[in-house]
Length: 133
Image 1 (cartoon, rainbow, N blue to C red):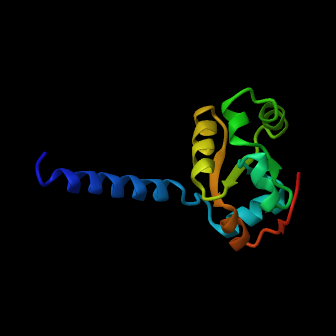
Image 2 (spheres, rainbow, N blue to C red):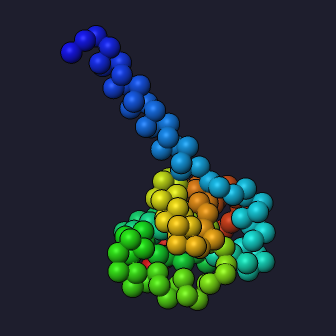
């Protein structure tokens, strides 16, 4: 190994971290999010896992874990059928999983966007609940 190898790995690692943060950014402005939800043209979805919901969720958000979207879709399929034609705004803890879920749903022809993190939903002025199941 030469002296550049550690620097190359460091640069690749930094690039990966930057890419993950870039990918997790919200794809919607707070004003647009609030307006669409209030108008009923969009629905909000928390894609975190059930064990995470006890820390709080956005009011009126559908609680649909990413694992179900990628798996059997026992919960997701009925939700998607019911909300055909609506925009889906997805969020999680940091925005990373919601970004992956939105990308998957877009590949399937759905109108899905990453709303970012639960903190971003709070900053957008959408009310939060302390605990929900």
